[in-house]
Length: 129
Image (cartoon, rainbow, N blue to C red):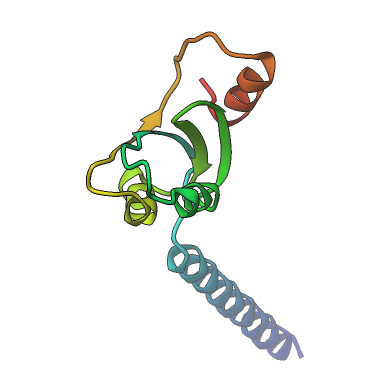
């Protein structure tokens, strides 16, 4: 009777250890199989559009599709996005002409300027020190 109880206890311990091992492997696999989430950064897009007869509406619409945006200064947009400057540039450049200029850079803290309270609220919401 005691021997059967010892064997049963050993079998239960082995079963629990196997289940823990299976659970541990599945958690490791799950964690490593997903890429880490991309960080949202604010990109500054500034441009000089020099072709008077060109329709730039598709360019503006493409900018709006890149993420959460702010546009209160002429020819300047701030876009909160997971894209890199190169990815954002590639997404919008086909909507301008070769005579136009376009610059996309990452905005980092600290920053300074003369803006409305609404503008500062948007900026401070997306860019943390």
